[in-house]
View (tube, one colour):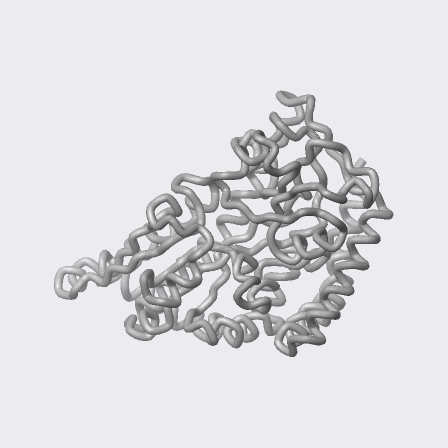
Length: 357
């Protein structure tokens, strides 16, 4: 869909820039509202959304404005899909794996444990059939889904105690969303999902024993290292994509040139969030390693990773047997990853292998 419109979108944007001031004075301003899962000012998630809204207003010459409401305004951090579907908000910004309780098929468009890297997943989404599958899933909910920014590979989480075996997971209370939560639940973890604003307090008070958030760039300001010093490398979210949601009735009422502007602004926001988060993490870790020597970076033991992979594969097979759409998405991802991973090995892995001391 996006690829077929690319030339038109570029032309439309140029036309808007060339005549925006006179048009804006003559036409009624279209005012939309966007609800996001995140608190205001949370970098880079909230920044991505406000930048998107600013770009739409600028590119449209003021013909379209988007008011951004954070979770403290609408009071429903994990209710974005319902609010957009109902038309309470024309747009939303969240992550699709939060809707797994409503529709398991929404989840793979965020990421899957032991799945594709960001480059692989983006290639699958735009050029390997992922976009069409997303449309098939989200059409049922009366919304359009678009990629809304990637964090890249996420860290495996902050733990109060060191994890040396499967037994160390039993009875552990952990905040972890998505399919990874299903995997750890099978291994004895008491899984919960909490919004960003509640995480530190829950960890500090012992309501949870561990949590995963994103990576150094976002984690450093949350202060998790002050309570839980063991910082584990990732396995569960190798390519976490956030999402924009748009109410389909509102979308269909937009003029074609404004639709093009909104799509361009979303793609720009998606790309910039990944770059920004990568830079934030690189900068943050260079400081954390020096300023917080108590942080102990760990990788889960090989036998535990093997157990996680086995449980993950079993749960995917069981869910696929119950749900043909889930199987269709998983088969598409697996087929594309099998091809893409060979190139990833040649282009990235072998280069890093030979150049990292």
